[in-house]
Image 1 (tube, rainbow, N blue to C red):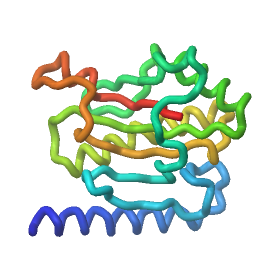
Image 2 (cartoon, one colour; image 1 turned 180 degrees about the vertical axis):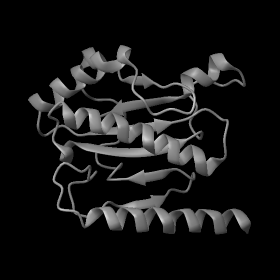
Image 3 (cartoon, helix red, strand yellow; image 1 turned 45 degrees about the horizontal axis):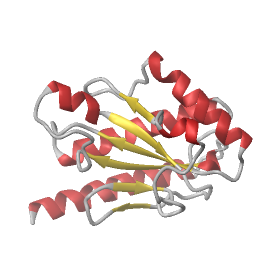
Image 4 (spheres, rainbow, N blue to C red; image 1 turned 180 degrees about the horizontal axis):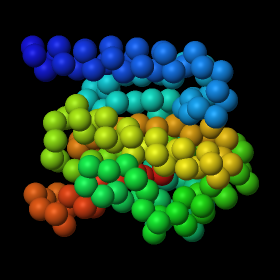
Length: 174
């Protein structure tokens, strides 16, 4: 009961924040699906979805040379992009700018530490950080969608730093 209340409260706050932001005429702001209002909802698995994650969400189907280079790892409790991943995003930006019909879903993930609500928010911040960088490289905002899975879809099972460091990530899926 309390968990449902918290989720409802978080959704209401997030929706209010997005609604307030969507009234801005700033064309550089990130609107995930190209509309003036971002779709927002918690999925059945508890993940937060922004944009249209069902638009071609059948795994990576971009160019083969990017298939094994589509993950950006983050530091603990951080959405800051590390310099070593700038090349990854530049390669994806180049592909997206050359293929304006292509769409990418940026998935934000966290390790298991922290509350589910906090991890959903951190996963979203990570995905948004990547999306903003891609926009700064000239990618059309309409090509970008984000989704936060928080701690729900770990890349590596384990309860130690070796596992956690691989789970703190954003993944680009076409």
